[in-house]
Amino acid sequence: MISIVIFTLLALGMGLYNRYVPVKSIPCNHTGELDPNTIILDIRDYNNKGNDIDPKSVNIPYAYLRRFKSEISPGNIHVVASDRLELNLGLRFLIRKGFNVTSYEISECPCKGKGGLEHGV
Image (cartoon, rainbow, N blue to C red):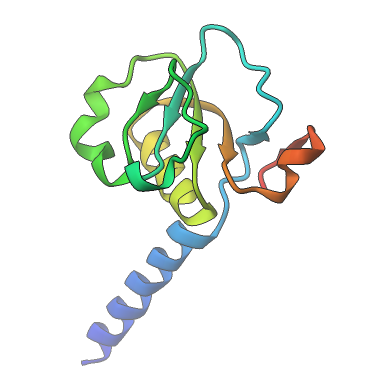
C-alpha cells in the first residue's frame, strides 16, 4: 500500500515538473532575427494560430508531435508556442527525441514588445 502511494506521488511530481518547470538552456527570441537555416516549428493548436502564421514554418501542433516528428528536418529549430505549458511540454519532447532546439517564442508573451532576449524564463 505504501509503495503505491510513493509511486503515485513520484508520478504526480514528474508530471508537474514536465509541465511547469521551464527549460533553462533555451533562450526566448521574439526579435524575429533568426539564422536563415533555422527551421521554425509552430506547435500551436490549429485554432490558436490567428493571423500571425509564418508561411515558412512547419506547423505541427503539440498533440501531433509524436506522430509527425519524422516531418521535422534535422537542424536548428525555433519553436513557436501559444503558452508556457505547451512550450515546456514541446521543448522537453523535442530535446528527448534528439532535435537541436536553439530558441523559442510564445505568441502572447508580454516581453514580445520589448524586443530583447530573455533567457529561460
